[in-house]
Image 1 (tube, rainbow, N blue to C red):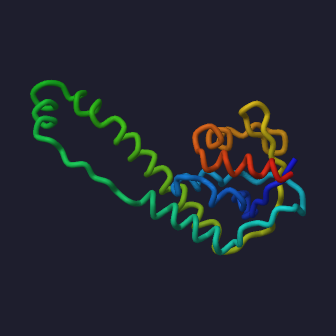
Image 2 (cartoon, rainbow, N blue to C red):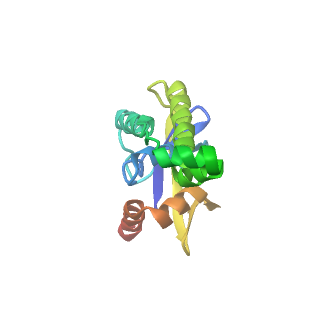
Length: 165
């Protein structure tokens, strides 16, 4: 089984292999996790730490972009004279995206407060696929599994990694 590198910073770890191998830049924040003990060495070299920081800033900038959709006059009248839930129903996806962007933005800001441009060490965690589920150090990982199922770029890179080993 291959092992992937992580930079350890305080009580967190940043994936140092897949961070540039996912489709949506803003999803990079999902590759941060609580510290876990792994191996001290591994065959896969980590992406340089300064590049990790740059990629995370790029993800933060993507999250920070605000796409404001203007109100249609019909939506205003429907919400005032008919039913306010019409407005919410028409904008449900947009509202959800805005909330997620705000959460991701706060997560990025918190990360930048912690990392301070240095890391404690690098550790390697064994990754494996069982059926269509991803495990790190024999523990089911919901984020990697979601990425494996929904992100073609991530899935292809993970499958390539297994083909090499």
